[in-house]
Structures are given as C-alpha cells and as structure tokens.
Length: 228
Image 1 (cartoon, rainbow, N blue to C red):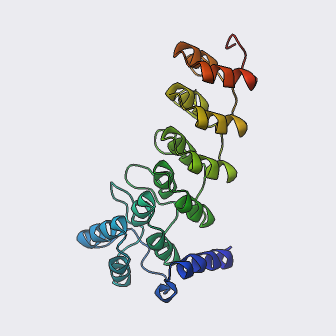
Image 2 (image 1 turned 60 degrees about the vertical axis):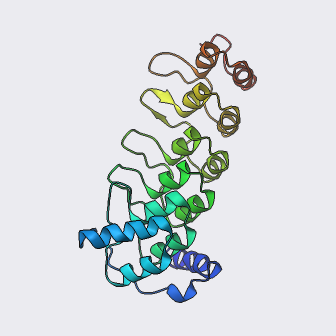
Image 3 (image 1 turned 90 degrees about the vertical axis):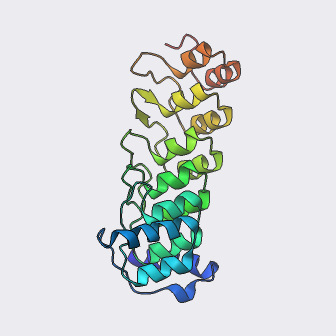
C-alpha cells in the first residue's frame, strides 16, 4: 500500500506541475506554535501552495485540528487539489477531523468536489466514517444535492442505507424533494421500505408532502403503497 500511495500522489503532483515539491515527511504531530498553525490552515484554505510549503518546511504540524478543520480538510472543502496533493505527500492524515468532527472527505463531499473526494479515497480515507451526528460523507453530499459526488461515493462503496437520528438517508432526501438524488440512492440499493423511529417510511413522507413524482418513483421501485 505505501508504494501505491506514493505512486498515486506523485501522479497528482506531476499533473499539477509540482514534482519538485516532493520532500521528506514533515512534522505530523498535532502540536506547535498556534499562530503558525493558524497560518497553515489559512494558506491551505486559500490555496496558497508556496506558503503551505514554507510553513511545512519550517516544521509546522500538518495534522493540527482547528474549528474549521485540518489544513487538508480546509483545502478539500475548497477543492484545492495541488495543496491537497502536497499535504498528502508530506504525510498528512486523510482522515483527520476538525474540532467539529468533520473529516476532509466530508468537507469535500458537502461542497461537491468530486475530484478531491477521489483523491482522498485513494489516499485511504474511510468512506463510511461518521460525524458526531452520525452522518457519513455520502449523507453530506446527498443533503447538499451534490449528485456527481453522491455517485462518486456510491461507486466507492459508500453505505447507501446509512441512518442517523431515526431516519435513513433516503427518507431525508425524499423529504427535501430531491428527485435526482433519490433516484441515485434507489438505484444503488436504498431500502425504499425502511421505517424510521417514528414508524414512517419514505413513501409516507412523500405522500405527506404531496410529492407525487417521488411517490411514483418509490412505488415503481417496490415501495408499498400503504407505506407499510
């Protein structure tokens, strides 16, 4: 796996014109001078690769956790692929969450950065890790209507039947009225007859909201007409 990861990251760096930036692993501990750590997070968020390189070479911790996320997390949230590739090559953890519990994968997914999602998955990010509320990266993408990213995560094996707080992801997406994302989830095997902690199904939610197209979609895919 180390050989594969190294080859993968070298590819991203080469395509971004950053081959010369490859250097030995940096300080990976989540410790260090607070202002320098904040500068690294800010530089990563703005996509300032030169500043990220300078701070990393100065020994600033790469896996620092701040409210807005780790350096890799904030870069992923904005789709800064060159910064992401550099940080991963230097040894940044693909799964380090911010103080809010959101991982880089969740941040990339919620903002619809499918390329960033693929990079993180190839670097070893766990596709089904949950945040403090129980939401996976797939849930973040689906609830934001990021269809391309939803499909990317499903293709990577994300659990389509993820649930939290008594409801399935499909139920929540149906409740939002998002037809296309509902179709993607159902096509990937979402349980159309799952009943939430309140006893309701996706069909009952669609019926209560008067979402006739979604009712038809659910019925065509095996949802029981009475919601039972």
